[in-house]
Amino acid sequence: MTWVSPLTLSGSIVRLEPLAQVHHDDLVEAVRDGELWNLWYTSVPAPAGMREEIGRRLGLMKAGAMLPFAVIEQAQGKAVGMTTYFNIDCDNRRLEIGATWYARRVQASGLNAECKLMLLSHAFEALDCIAVEFRTHFFNQQSRQAIEHLGAKLDGILRSHQVAANGTLRDTCVYSIIRSEWPAVKSNLQYRLAKRASGA
Image (cartoon, rainbow, N blue to C red; front, side):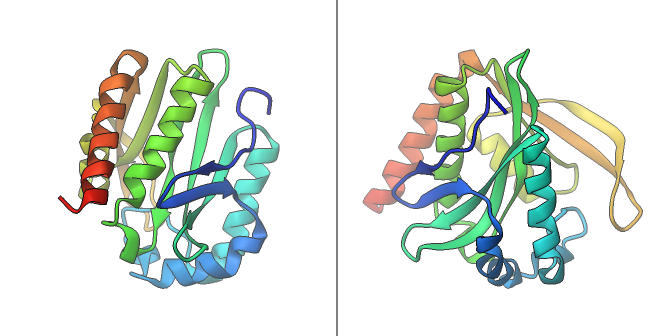
């Protein structure tokens, strides 16, 4: 992997560091907060499958198809979720941010906004991306609202796109932020984080 290489991104709320099996126990604890694997419209690993999921993501990284991160809450120094760069298209300077989940207790803490600010900043400013995609299930309203709140635009819906774990067919909502939109998106994320920090 030459265009997208492992790295650590640090903010005041969260640190994103290369995923490793050393994060396993923290991630098992995190996923139990909210029993996230029971949400039928997401693909979150159950506690018993966490080691296998970490291994799967590391295998995709070795193949150059994914750059997985452990999401570390700075205050406690513990992993509270995962996120990735994937669908990496070096020739066209595009990638997707996704395969993301967080422990329930941090989902409204500003952690996601800071994660996205760091991931998008690196994508557009260091990797010179032309566009960054986000994809989610049509029925995952929480995820869709969070993506739209970033300022991403809906490109379209891929109907009957994937077979879900429960056998249903997933309609996938495809969103993107393009390079010309990034300055406004960045300003919005910075404003949201500053407002939260000030208690306003």
